Image (cartoon, rainbow, N blue to C red):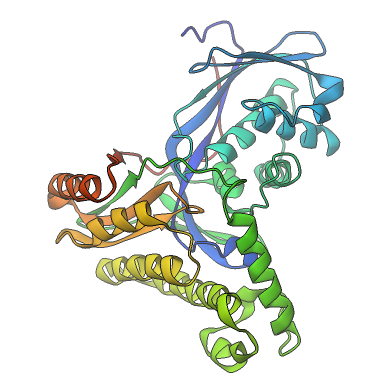
Amino acid sequence: MQFNGYDYKVSAAGRVNLIGEHVDYCGGKVLPAALSMRNTVYIRPNGTDKINLSWTDLPDKIELDVNRLGEYRHLKHAKYQAGSLYLWQQAGHKIVGCDMLHDCTVPFGSGLSSSAAIEVSTIAAMATAAGEKPDSVEIALVAQKAEREYAGVNCGIMDQYVSANGKKDCAILLDCKTLEREYVPVRLGDCEIVIANCNKPHNLVESKYNERRAEVESALEILKTKTEISCLADLTVEDFEKYGAALHGKIKDRARHVVEECDRVRRAVKAMRSGRTEEFGKLLAASHASLRDLYEVTGKELDSLAGAANAHEACLGSRMTGAGFGGCTVSLVKKEGVEDFKKFVAARYESETGYKPTFYEAELSDGIIREGV
């Protein structure tokens, strides 16, 4: 594939969430990191009112009309690009005719946010081609709006924010209510992070993601009648024990997960900063158990993959990462045991599910990167 002839190379990162799952849309704090797996856009203005999309791994070639960007929701492979550009246009930014070549190394359906990487890089590339230098937080907010309003996924802000604002060798402690961020250096001593894909594809639009959002919103409305909170993340564990009696059944389970997961994030940051990797690993395992039992977003494959990981002596803790219903696990593993860990997990997982997992070696990376070609 020839990349010469383009003027700019603009990329945005996929992400792994270390801990803090399904709390971003509840106003909680999360601890994600941007990955070296990215969506890269090669772009050149073409002097027309047409945007020509192509891909390195697809034969499709799609033409978008700059003046009709709101009309492409039906496109399978281009709706994220079209939606991002349309919402960027609606926000008052300049859209120019151009040729865009997309090259994505974030595995699709993995839970590592290929969609956010596509949205953020598309907007950043267009802004670069149009001569704008927008704020990366604004890009993230518009990208999130595109996924919600154009693609139909009622997502929180975490994925797009990290894709745009990641920092090499750091995680981001992100307050999803205020968008305040703090970079936390990832120092894991004699351990490393291993990401494993269960290789069961998932689709958030067709999953129970939006159903879970509705459930926690119902819990919030009930709890607002008992105490002054603006989001579920405002509740401490002690508060929940006091006021949670107003909730019942699955609604109570969903809210309990959110409250306890927010507490795990706080403890995980303290553990990471002080080098207590064993404590951090235990929090990962506890997070998965909560996502399995209280939030019910794991499923057979993710439970098998995390279960195999947690059973290996070199693993300090493993959990699903992302929205669930398929995708990846993130595990904290002692470096000297990584290769044996992979063999053990792969064999046990395949015997239990029939799927072969894929393991990724990815560094923690910056978010948006702009380069000339």
